[in-house]
Picture 1 (cartoon, rainbow, N blue to C red):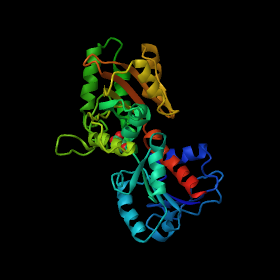
Picture 2: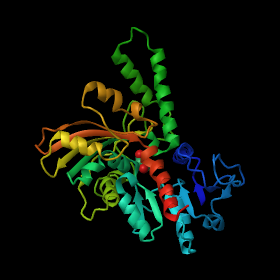
Picture 3: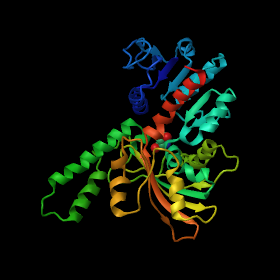
Length: 372
Ligand code: HSE
């Protein structure tokens, strides 16, 4: 199969290529790589590919793009908005497989998260649909953790309070977070053994507000801090990130009546794992053992962590989960706010199940569908 890759050098694109290599996905592919900045340059490695990829092609070369039977893009919404309508208007019939949000809510698009919505993807393919878009990272990770509860129709409402990593905001901001950590860390080396904890806190706070503290990309201190706003403001006081929770979950689950989902989206100083603390109102009384089983049945990657201090602090953290395919769920317990309320925390790697993996798997599904 002839597949074009666009935006393959950034964090999501690099994660996608690494996963494709691990899973031997290049085998049988004639991959072409497109570039907005360096056409003619050398292509990346594609171990096992049907042929050596040609030098990088210009990302505005519509005729080269239209020779592809699938285009996989991690380039971002601006490129999608520029290229997709032109290709479709020219009658291109290949699969458009996209990590960006631009097309997610279009009537002809399917948001792909196949461990959760494979029947919906199969129905879309059978109906001749050709636009497949990965979901918002927070939403995909929520459903990879808790999809079983929706499948079992146990969720009456869901409130999710997120702790989102810097990677979701982009590579530059993630790197700046580490520069901020380093800048604050220098205070550790300067404080005398006799300094009080209050003196250290004061020195750190002063440094965070210092004009030399690196905030050029994020705009604010994030290390040692948190930023409770993600994405653009909407008129009703929500951020767009908060709006996506219900809007995208409803589409991924293929529901006609949405389950109410809302909560606050917060950026924290972790690198690439998004966590979310969730309150769920149940549709019917269910004991915790049943709920635990339903959660565990969500997917082979969903891992329920026992609600003990040791297991939680060892397994239910960004440090434990980063760079892995595991979506961890833990702190599962009844909340005392109402008899039908439960609480839990779930987290996963924002670049893997949150971005690259649903897109990688969709290319596989398209290949199976077309027999290639
Ligand atoms: N909007 C998400 C974030 C990432 O800012 O973390 C994109 O899916």
